[in-house]
Image (cartoon, rainbow, N blue to C red; front, side):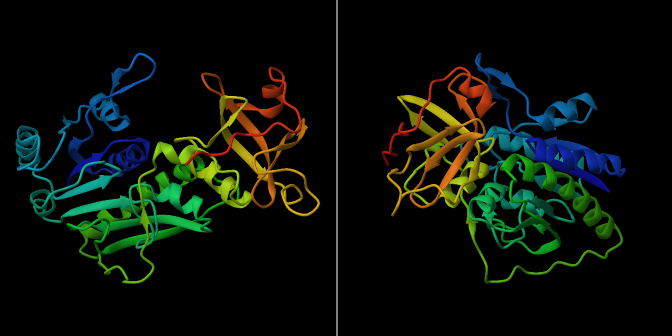
Length: 326
């Protein structure tokens, strides 16, 4: 079976490695164009591109695949490369470009997508983050037969995975990526034997995982502590939940719920106020309940556990994180 692979970040790289390890011939890789990154904003190749080049796999990096779009030359070159590769199937994992009908219809077995949720829950760009933010108890991976809709195609394989109480987007990603690699190998092996059976997605239980916006990073301390704590985990590593204390923006990377801290009868704290400074963390009042911040980062600094962070800071009870402005 000849495979063309389309993917960009680490999540996709894990699947590509598994396909090669299982003996599938990867004839061509599509990945996003190199992006500027780091302080010098130098162009950096995607994880998938670096892997493919190191193993002599041909790479294409079109800015668009639409023949009638903004970059028709890119699309024409991509089409020529895809035709030359003669794929039986196209495997997609976190690629980042929409596949127009001409791509979906070209491989005999179509295009199979590795999606990091149990469809139809969390269709869209950020299923891992939105599942944690919503307080879901489980996530998973779905292998889907792609169609023209947004993650609306038939389900080929699916496997659930529990979300731990302390899982961040980073740790859940690292659990789901190998699961996706195993499932896509299983799906292609079933396809080779003609045993892969599509199941239409149900009409109920549909939700959308909208792309994470940097503006969501600002913590609204008026919200309940449990909602803020989930959002902190959901936004690790990007964009990182943040608050402003004494005019300085602090990233909050880890926190623990503290039900005994908060506003209301018996408490003088207001949302965002530091109730207590302890070696184990900063107790901060929220709209209801409170939380202990245990890992922080100053702008331009490193992530630090609170004991190390406090060594260079003077923080005291009564200080207050600035209210969110929007």
